[in-house]
Length: 148
Image (cartoon, rainbow, N blue to C red; front, side, top):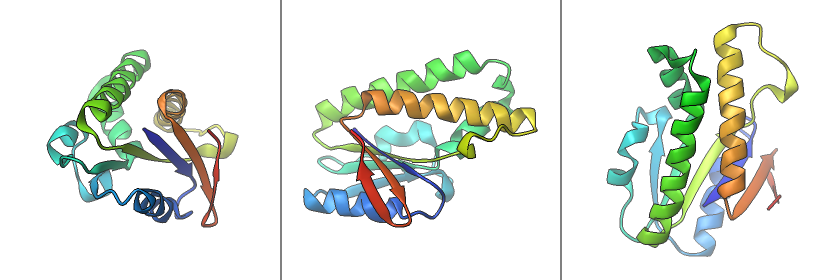
């Protein structure tokens, strides 16, 4: 699994496409920006292709707004299990999974409770993803640096 993180409009998609082009692997995309549902990931993943996930902040916010904001630990476990399932399926499937995630907050604590919960949950998810990923990249201004 790969994790590509950075700010909005920093060039993460382009970097992901370049990384997958090196291995000449086809890509399937699951994007909350296109209203794709996260729980549909197994159906989207084409045999032998890589699978890219983007828009995690929207999927997290949807869960928070479904009344689970008071249960951050439960949500963290849910997403941690999803990442573990992804790693397992990646090995079985033969294609790489790539997570594109936004850098959120730059250390600034949001005033609104929902925004704080989103920032916290997203931060935990990125930590869990970084731990499980074979490769981690940080992207800024169209440049990338491999961190792991």
